[in-house]
Image (cartoon, rainbow, N blue to C red):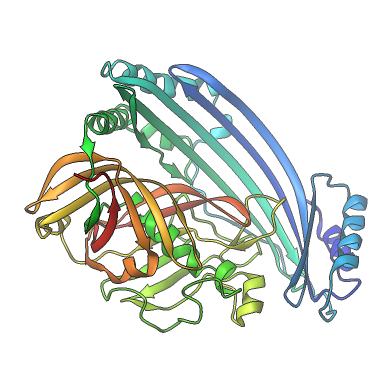
Length: 461
């Protein structure tokens, strides 16, 4: 990391014309991973990367430059070039730097970077052997362990001077069952801000069995029906629908340019009275947590929706200028090659009062979705389309036969208002989220919920 004196020199060059704000973002990251397919390692390695990003803002105009060459003279020239490109704004003074503030959210007992790739391999190999011997229909096992450590420093013209360290590890286990040319999968992919002790403690064979059982159920299942019906979404990764169809529409990335269906709706009712939701980067050890965001602001536990009422947006520096409100500590980026913007962290629908079993028994007919897949969302309209990886029919208040091929189609704002039962079994699931500032670790979550009516795409009877 550069010393404060060098960073101030860069800021001085960046502010030499009309910018009213500038920041220096430095980053050092290292990673280790092993990937396996059917018992054979297909990828393994360690990596190290470092670089510097320089951002200038003039009003709502932004210029961002970066380099993996950390030579101070290279970066001074880069800052001068950026200053010549920025338009508008009123030059301001650089404030005196605060004392360096170091933060971290990691809870590491065994540093994954000190564990051999051979240990990574042995862990995955036992899962692979188990899966491929479980049933003749299980034709493929894929697994990976990926760990990474990142230290980032932010210094800006408002005197911010922070350094934050994050350390994460994630496991992925996936099995594929094949029958009559049809393939179906089962997958788990937990992630955490703990160390390799998380892997040592993980019930790998039990979870591999779950993956196999899911794949086998789905490859033997009939097709889901189509039409509007009640849909029960299980806890955990079911929250990906809220994340995609609603969460992104609450980010300043879209709200700030009035490209969200939730623009100018603070204080208004946007969801059922049963729905409260948060974006909480403070959860200890959670995959999407962080102590300090990539603009040097303290992270937040942000109440997004309270009993159906919209309470807050996710706001970064540039968004705050467009929206005339304060940043909320949610600015993130994949690495130094990206300019930061508003992003989610651990985003979830809060616990309700219903017992999950009562939600099923209260549903005469519908679909119970236990594993969600990929999908697409238009934040300007709320239209979404999500695949369901594992589902069951609900008949007469009981879980019935498994079905495959279901797709959920609708609008995010309608889904929120149609939630009529919320369980008390909140669970979180790790994932990766892609947006303007690259791919970042996030957690999605929810208790079991029921949506009174969603259009289900399936197969006509």
